[in-house]
Image 1 (spheres, rainbow, N blue to C red):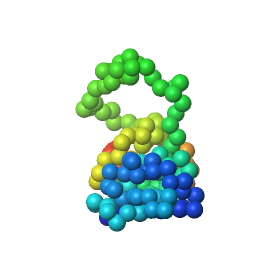
Image 2: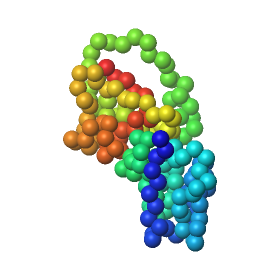
Image 3: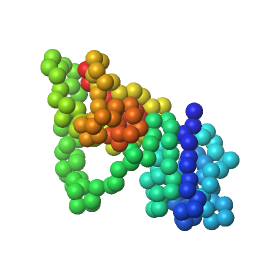
Length: 163
């Protein structure tokens, strides 16, 4: 099922940036405002690119596990690691095939989920199982279940299994 596109046409400047990034052709300009198009190929996949590039924030996508509260601002360029630092980190990666039988601290799970939510969206969305015994909730967003669209630190398009 496609995601739902909501547009506040009153505030739209008609810049067209959202149209440039929509690979479904689900948006078009009519009378200098962006509107949903009837030329959509397969329906909105909920990638959120149109929301991210909109300078006035007039587009909201909901459905397919995406919500505007899950978006985050890009970090300042001064915090970006150098090529050498990034390459070193990637070269140090290893697959872990044997695990200790001890619980993972909630703070570490929060950090893993925060990092994972920045990964490009994969379709179809997959589930996240953090604990088979109890429902996990994010310590950054207290009281919000991880399957809720109200927590920006969770995106069901990521596969993380921590049991």
